[in-house]
Length: 440
Ligand code: PLP
Image 1 (cartoon, rainbow, N blue to C red):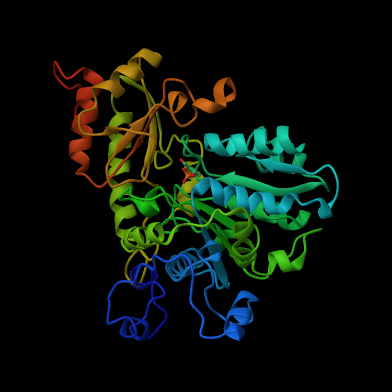
Image 2 (cartoon, rainbow, N blue to C red):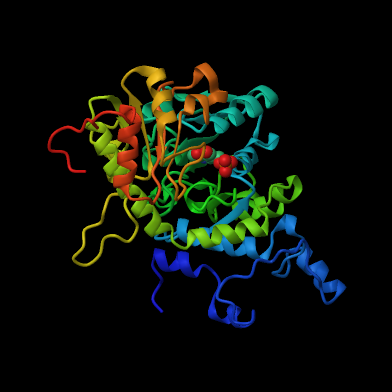
């Protein structure tokens, strides 16, 4: 068989015919709901625990079902990178971010560490860096002034910088960073570039292929779109080397996390949740394609309404990082002989109803189809006001406008989502104001 394409890798995962036959022919990976393994001898137990023999020991250091999820994610994120890629799955996206970043704050790498990050990050990431690392551990946190200007990053990197961190696209302003340019800066400084690509998913953007070293995901979002499980992942190229960091840590970073920090600190994903996430990931490409096509339609519609002051969507030409999205966000495998590749810009958008905070609250209250909820990437469309939800904890420092509604477009018919937004914006009484000539 030639190398399978992305959609095939997602469906097939790492569970093959042979393994199925040894599990009564089960077409689906079994959910190994067990906390520990039995060994046929003391020596087998010793060798497996010592890592000299492949196998599973105790669920806090991994389980066959979490192993299947890790192998699938590594194959998808590593797709077309030509690199060997491994993954570790965690309880939540925040656990993945904390594990991936705290590993680089060890004292052996020197005194007075600092980290350099884009301030356009999800609220809890800002809290981990500012409160947990800054206030509690004395790490200097350097938020770059303008994450979309490479010079802004370059200015604040020095010999004590431990890593660069960015979300691309960011939650909720959906702005991208120039990953290849930041990867070059990180390489020059001998430090990792860590990218949270939750909002893109590997179906649209694979940072490792663009030069990043480590990718983190919240699987609670589009990867686990049915909304049944939380989860996170750290995915990295093998054979990484960084200034001041031990090669044992970076040679296989995911394995290091799994058998070191994750085992010790206990942030492993439960096999049951790994099993539900595996089921969701099978249709990732098709689902993200549908959601992204719907989101573009909704964004274009909102941009044409005179009662919407501003729309944030990287697929719109006026968006600050549209040029980066056009360059880097492609539906995987959409190009081929006789077919041009297709840009897809993701399922998340933001908009500010004209009339300020009160108008935004009113529109959110009036939604009848879209759910008022603080999650995104789900098959069900959800909306929130980040200033009172996902980014509330960041407070006055948040760059997110207080009157911005964040909308995550699901797989419902986009026409129905548009109708719901129209009635919410107009109050549901009176005609829907649609600019003349707009396609619906
Ligand atoms: N990264 C991004 C971009 C997110 O939007 C979120 C949550 O909204 C997280 C990380 C954290 O994920 P989790 O809630 O699974 O911890």
